[in-house]
Image 1 (cartoon, helix red, strand yellow):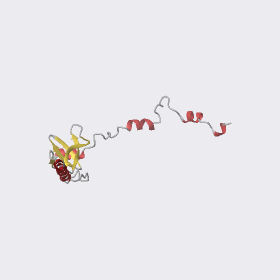
Image 2: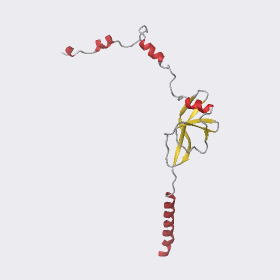
Image 3: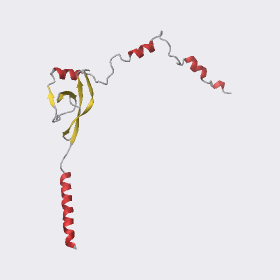
Length: 148
């Protein structure tokens, strides 16, 4: 009976050695992210994944740069290496200059909230119907002297 256990033990030993060898292989990767430039709106979309890149870690502390993925233009502050599917675009290329100067697509338009602020500060503006005034609030607050 002992002889039948030898092949099982040998197989378990080989499986353990193979697992140990595989675990020593470095598989460090990170997701390279960038903002897609929308030329129709002249703005940058939110950061999104472009591709998984081999490397030990990611840093987003590099100067903004442009990269092309197919026909799309992206801007990123991720440090190289670039994704394999991307091509670096020269910083002095007209489309890269426009993309680097573009605001976020999520940024509010300048003066977008100005209409609400103007109404609130306009002394001639009509009061909002149902709105409380200081007199209405003061009349409903119980004074400590009223408690009996």
